[in-house]
Image 1 (tube, rainbow, N blue to C red):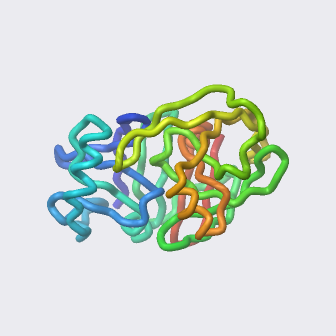
Image 2: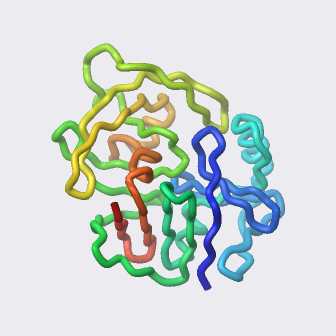
Length: 224
């Protein structure tokens, strides 16, 4: 059984409502949590850890009621996740949907994180796919050595932070476009480097069209 939900956003983070409870959908989180210890998806109740401390923090920083978080461990149990930001929907599939005409990317799964290769400023880069990132972020050594184009305020479960922003050319699906990248906080840079990655990408990629993710097959499909 497939299930489609309307997407809403809290501080740039995608959220859905299941049985009157609100959940963040976050491929940048390796684990799922809920106050009840269970999340119902595709006619099944999935047992997940209780994450009261993390969820209390999300409620505070996102300034809205959050009852749970759907992370990589739960999405890995499904056939595919189809994310359509332009139409504000997300569909959880038991099997891979039709991907005819889509641009195909190989993905590796590391501790439930999704990693793929792209091109940023004409350089090959290895990045983490993170629906919880309102803008993409790169490690310090990847960013240009010039004054930032602007600054942005963002949130993590531990609180808010400010980041410089740089516009950089990015290639996805055979198309080149400008993307605004922030600077990863120091702790997140350590985590990204452990995965031998250069940064995380999020909303700017999803805004391009429909993104279909299959953890089982290690594939990402882009439909523009």
